[in-house]
Length: 226
Ligand SMILES: CC(C)(COP(=O)(O)OP(=O)(O)OC[C@H]1O[C@@H](n2cnc3c(N)ncnc32)[C@H](O)[C@@H]1OP(=O)(O)O)[C@@H](O)C(=O)NCCC(=O)NCCS
Image 1 (cartoon, helix red, strand yellow):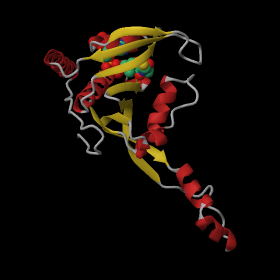
Image 2 (cartoon, rainbow, N blue to C red; image 1 turned 180 degrees about the vertical axis):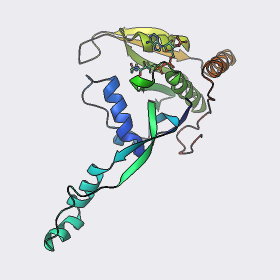
Image 3 (cartoon, helix red, strand yellow; image 1 turned 45 degrees about the horizontal axis):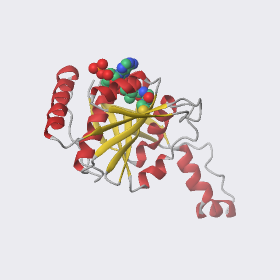
């Protein structure tokens, strides 16, 4: 299996929302990805599986278009049946296996989220996404990357440890669903020569282990890196 990265677009919202709900079912309200994509500060990356697509019926979008606008008024006027229940086109989308999102402000990157579909975990995708976040942070000339993570989230803690994040504090009862504490972590000096060397080693080790090539993405320019 090979995976690739690209910047997230509106066509990914349904899949990214599903991945988010699977990973964080108790977090409420769920993130508004439509809003996030319009947010100047927000940067989102998705990982896709090479050669795999998924069907996505656009029932909701179509019913919104049909029933909210002028078209529906005209249909009613002329006594046409609304399109509910009619055949709807089926779109094939690239299969998204994970995503990462961060905010860049005041010279800092704050990692908002990173998640991989459960069925696709342990294949180096989380690492791939984190490498891309770090590269984008470097390109944006961020001074550091910060994040919060649940104290019980061993998988994420190990991932961040592996990339050199250090623990900078604890926020008590930070998560509203179960009042779990958050570990605050940060990765500093991301532009230093020593960190760049370390990151290069991690990229090479990732390639040796998983066999698919990491390609650097430009930060939020809309250009695909495939
Ligand atoms: C955290 C997460 C993104 C990792 O994704 P992944 O694709 O499975 O991770 P990778 O295969 O790239 O693993 C990279 C490293 O993460 C750590 N890791 C991943 N899964 C782990 C697990 N189950 N237990 C312990 N460490 C784990 C390891 O350090 C691993 O490196 P290694 O294989 O050399 O030991 C994934 O578990 C996930 O989506 N979790 C739910 C969402 C979440 O908690 N996100 C973090 C919010 S702060």
